[in-house]
Length: 97
Image (cartoon, rainbow, N blue to C red):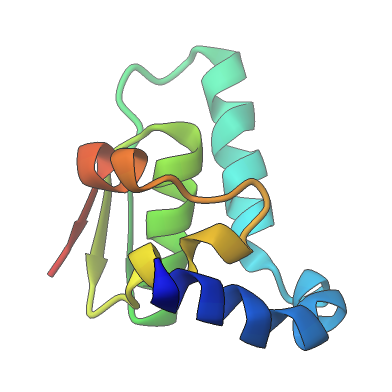
């Protein structure tokens, strides 16, 4: 919990700027849109490095399988996203290689 709180504190001064480059919101919205279409029975997302982090966030927020290759640690920074990335969803829907 200490690192999670520290990440939130350190993120606060930049939170307004972070909204401008919050690419995970676009991918999460896109996956939600795909889910509403009910055209695809199996949606998965993957990415490498920063893209892996975006994949992990999107997977946890939309509850779809996500694979990251060398993605960042989401357990520490997960609370800084809106909505927050829950550890239980990371465990259930994500895999970081």
